[in-house]
Length: 511
Image 1 (cartoon, rainbow, N blue to C red):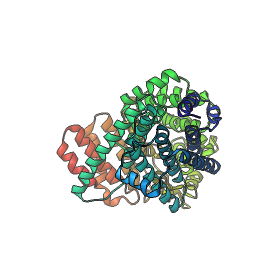
Image 2: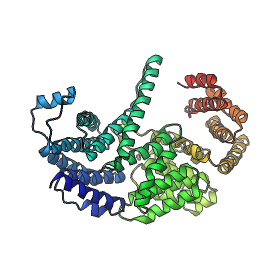
Image 3: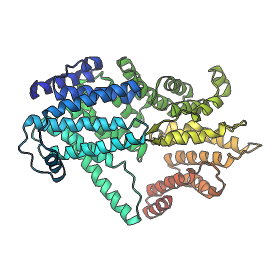
Image 4: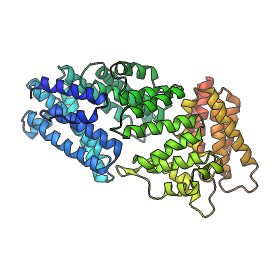
């Protein structure tokens, strides 16, 4: 099949996919490298959603077949010529249009295969994945010099932009001066990556949706969970607008619409949209799991613990993403309910916390997931024959996932959470037999209370809460994260006051 016809058919498949017709999109006759790449991409998404070994194996097989097909259309050259062109950016004017697209498709499939490799637990797979990403990046740079076709250019934008954002996740330890240089370098990379992705999203090419989704993930998840909690919601809405118009019932589009509403504090509308996303299709039930996770938090923000439990329970029983987190979260939410309601639900909180510690944790690329390690550490106190209860664990996990950046937009919800924390504070003060976790529990409450007061504009009272934790450092026995995290929040408080010098001093102490 010629290139133009293949691209048109892949456009049709993309429209089917965005209209929730996932099986129809997969029923492509793989007659070209673009057909093969599109088919593999859908299988990779499915594997990432299910974590089922059979889906991972099917995606890997399809990716290998796609690489072989792309290889047939690539320029035939010796290994020395190929390496020279990759490393020294030799001119590529002698490539035909089909060969250019073959290079691009090969790089994209290679990237997907490398990323999928990271789902394997072995260190060897981790190394293979890293080398695959490096090779794919070099090929994208090679393709960049040949971007003459709209679909080709869109693919290069997507690839280079994604790689520049991936660079931001690398951790390096260095001296103070080098650290500053590295931070500036990362900021430049981020802006370069975002610029490439924006160009790709606006290009009206086959890969525009991939650039758009990458930008949405960056603004709505990466910067929220791993950053300061403030994503660019204005840009996210603008990116999504044409897709909302063309695919109003598309599950993926409805999902991101709901996520934006949630981050803006429009929680009731977000809940309605997540439920609409669930109702939109039954074929890919993993999208339902994404909605369950968001609904769990949406109801937690309202302290509607019974509804939050409902979705945590569904996740713990149906999703394989992170059983340790789901079971821990379920137990944490149940801890916020009166004991009679927990009994009515036929649940045992102690057993759930123990189960979250024992044997549920995953490993990716040979490494543990930080949030799972945190949950396991918190649940250890339930392992003894005389377990000591966690204090407001669902609210603590809300902080871990940066949820206070959402509820902070709703003073009414913050005030309700503050009321819960004041009640927990009083119960700790009245405890006749303080345990070894007593100071830790008090400091958890003070951190969350300080956050609420800060969001409500009571900065002096918030500072008192934060300083109480910092002064208690020597008496904290288990939750050693509390002091550096509190100092970070105190630094942001000084920044909010306009006292930049003090803010910088506090944040330097955090390091």
